[in-house]
Image 1: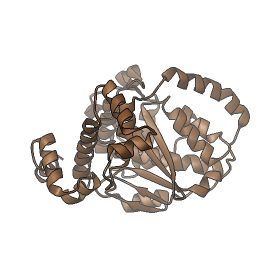
Image 2 (image 1 turned 180 degrees about the vertical axis):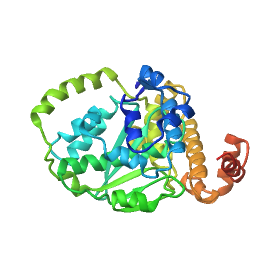
Image 3 (image 1 turned 120 degrees about the vertical axis):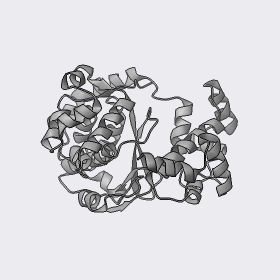
Image 4 (image 1 turned 90 degrees about the vertical axis):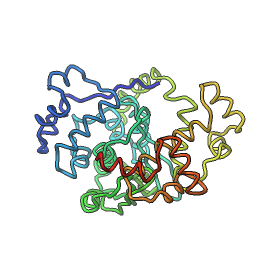
Length: 333
């Protein structure tokens, strides 16, 4: 399993200062000193998210995450990005980026080819809360930046889907040059499948021959990154877009029978229904907090057949109705 350790590069404060962020104010609000941050070197996922939320609060720059993701110099890139840049083409670069990202932090990158599109999603394995907008923007900007640096061309995504209530269309469109859809069920970046064949000018087989054995050894040391319950959570999260997520469908995607899946889940101390309820609860909270979707629309996205069923389920989770929960959440924000 991935340890809950997210590295904080020593130059992160310098990078923030370089783009005009008041670093002293960030540290004050985060209740950290430079020495403490340097000594820690790593934060937990919760602490890492909290740090970037403070940066969001302190900075008024709406394009901050986009700039941090797209403007990193070569010496600021992590091992996943470096391995990707030296791949032979964009498709292989994305595979390497996804494979070695787990060496950097407890984050997975899912790449699915559907109807001529490469659908890219970043998933923080140990997150129990909404991913900060800066991290989402930075992740997608990093992918597009790798594509641009590697090919020497401007690779324009087909579209970007964002879960936030309202995307800053001008800022994000200017960065990616494509349609931006807000209030989406999950954050997704879509590339044209044909772009994956674009060759990389930065391809360096000799350097990969030096890098990859060490990276593969490190991946092997990590062992399995998740349990069958984690796999079910991930698949359920992808299906929170109006589909009724039955155990038969999930088992079929995992290439096992429903009975086998239930038995394996029992072995790790849970059930399919418990996982479905948990994913629905987290998705409901996120959609109610970050979008303007009505309760009926949220119910549809979560796969409930009717609003009353969703309302009863939500009341059992939160002790109140979706409408009242949203009002309380908005008053806190």
